[in-house]
Amino acid sequence: MKDLKKVVEYLFISKVRIKIIRLFFLHPDVPYHIRGVVREISEEINAVRRELLRLEQIKLLKSERKGNRLYFILQDSFPFYNELLSMVYKTFGLGGEIIRCQKELGDIQFALLTKAYTKGIKMAMSDIDLVLVGRVNIQSLTAAVQRAERQTGREINYTVLKESEFVLRKKRRDSFVLSMLQGSKVMLIGNEDELMM
Image: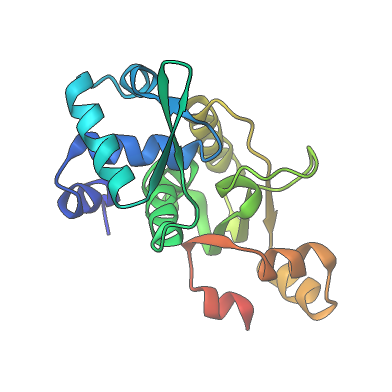
């Protein structure tokens, strides 16, 4: 698939809605008030208000009044939360960069974003956001990661494993590889069933 952004635009009619969904999923723990969303996505306030209310109506967002402002926050209990999260991360930011640059990156069997990245859950500064398995062109990878860091405004930690090293560490039940396999993840390249085998 050449351009996943086009696919998302065909699936979701409203470009304002796409921008709002992207904003909330890329910053899952940040509450936004209407004017904050308008500033972030550069769209007209009435269109933003209408889409926020629609997303609240289907329970993707929850609103809460603080003083005279109404704040919206993402609800991870939404039935299609993981599917939307996967779509957003495959289309925008780091995941979008990896998918777009796949050929330049080398011969990659698997590429995935970890829960540390997608859910913003960092236990330590050393938590890994992106894992690639295969023969990787490090210069191309570094350029893609730097572009994503500029887009998202956050530092990205990644690790690259040769396929033989990945297989060996999986056989030895290496704690890093096991936690990566067992944790929630967004597969960018490769099949999750094959990753687990």
